[in-house]
Length: 112
Image 1 (cartoon, rainbow, N blue to C red):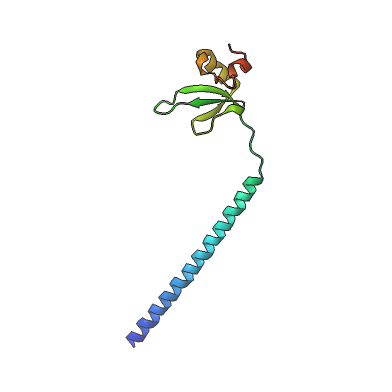
Image 2: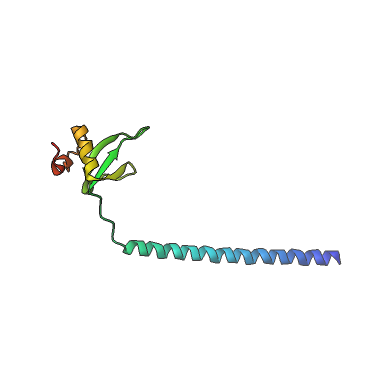
């Protein structure tokens, strides 16, 4: 009798494993569907407008500022952060070599 009960117990445990695997597969498919839905919603949103002014930071410790740009000229990457016009003017007044040579924020801000 103990052999029969252990076999039926093993069968019940294997059944439980199959059911849990099916539940996990179903939950993963729901997650995939939700990720697709969120991606579609994000794709329909218009991109946020660029900031008016950005600073490009260097690499390494301290992250010094290497350039000031107009918002449309902003280089891509994690080393770029938006700043206000007053902060951009202050930075450009401290060091005129910080002005981007392409977008010329110093001219636009009146700092020469």
